Length: 114
Image 1 (tube, rainbow, N blue to C red):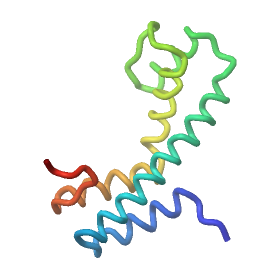
Image 2 (image 1 turned 45 degrees about the vertical axis):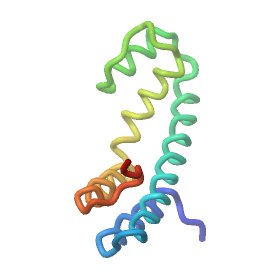
Image 3 (image 1 turned 90 degrees about the vertical axis):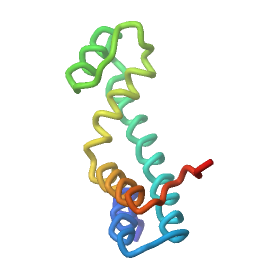
């Protein structure tokens, strides 16, 4: 049985509270990679879904999704904004955000301190 990106992120998020230090960093790293992969997949889906829209209609769709934008932005940027609006509400993105915030409160993050 193949595990989906969402399932794996949810599993990692469930394991994170009982994990510490370097093991937590490893969980965060895997979850971050899956987060990026999931967003990229959704961005491609959104691009295909809105491929036939004019620039003005795309701006209107982005605005309707609650994302700030303007007509000077390119099509790719507008598609990213649409995908981001949708992605941020997925179980995978919500679980990852909560996982990363909890880890940060415990002093663990993927960006090394300088």
